Image 1 (spheres, rainbow, N blue to C red):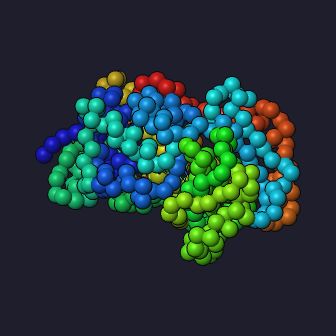
Image 2 (image 1 turned 180 degrees about the vertical axis):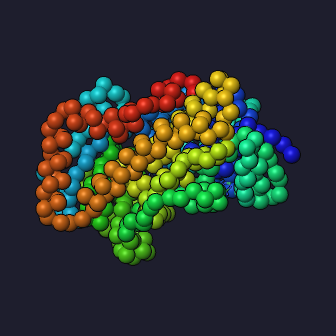
Image 3 (image 1 turned 120 degrees about the vertical axis):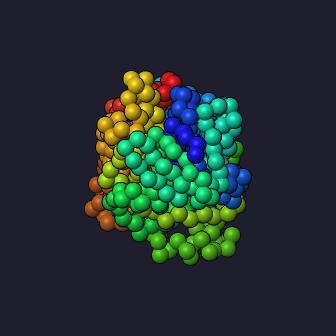
Length: 407
Ligand SMILES: Cc1cc2nc3c(=O)[nH]c(=O)nc-3n(C[C@H](O)[C@H](O)[C@H](O)COP(=O)(O)OP(=O)(O)OC[C@H]3O[C@@H](n4cnc5c(N)ncnc54)[C@H](O)[C@@H]3O)c2cc1C
């Protein structure tokens, strides 16, 4: 039976950077992923983009991933937040964030998920301590005092000092370890599509709050933007089934005309939206990271950023423990990670949930309160800058990787 220091179940956009950070720090690391690498890089696999906060960009740069991603990433120069009703002009109160105001070149970057995955795969071969086994699935994990035993679906058995589950929202391992979550579904669906437009977006991202939910227009490279269109669950199938002309007409009612003529290009995707938070993030010899530990509403584009922060914090805790000669799978080591990340995850998950509840309705008194709130924050410089730092992920105790240093 072979032995590794750390086995990660799930080589998604959180599991792979975590594997890289651990392997670059000297741990013999095995990442096991159920999906074939060639499939996850196909445009049809995942139509989403991710808004990468600048702290996440610093982390990808420190891991050596950024050079491969930068040509495909669009800097976000400004963010405009407005409130309104479908087919009507936006409320006169709005919130405007400008990177220049905080002396930055950008507030983050937008990159297609397939390009993020390709950039991660691009550096794996150069990392001697890291192996990706895919397609292969983790079938079960048994933890004992001295280590963990992992059985893969193909029958292989591997021993490890620590197993990390980064296998997404529906994590089978999390359930198998008896780790409970609190959570609920939103009565909303996230419709995702790429839109081509006549005029350049100049790096401006738009978050337009409509009664069914936020309608985000995220600038991509070229004259393209990605839509994250949150719609009432009952209405989404009808919109997704519209012919091209009908879909473009619905799009135009919400998108407005500021970028000239618009049309959806390529397929439309839809994602059920839900919230969950694991009650515990760790057990002896076992830890959760990324969407496996927490799933949040995409309203603020922070789910992946939160998962990358888990990865950076966990790598730092484990490397510090190893430097001090401590057992990396011991509960007291892993509890340091849990204390660091669980409250931060809860705070962000709760605020995105509250934001969605406050904005996704057409209740007049609430509309007045939130419009006033947007206007007030916009008028107060320090408040504006506080929210910009939040959007950039530059708040709280930052792991070394997110400061751009080695883990
Ligand atoms: C519409 C939408 C828009 C979003 N926009 C943004 C955004 O702009 N910015 C942002 O920060 N976040 C965004 N997010 C959130 C972000 O996409 C997720 O937080 C992120 O993808 C989570 O990554 P992960 O690696 O934890 O999980 P996943 O991406 O779910 O990866 C899990 C991996 O585990 C593997 N796996 C599963 N089971 C097993 C097993 N038994 N054995 C081995 N492997 C297994 C899977 O193959 C997969 O590769 C958005 C989400 C949605 C729905």
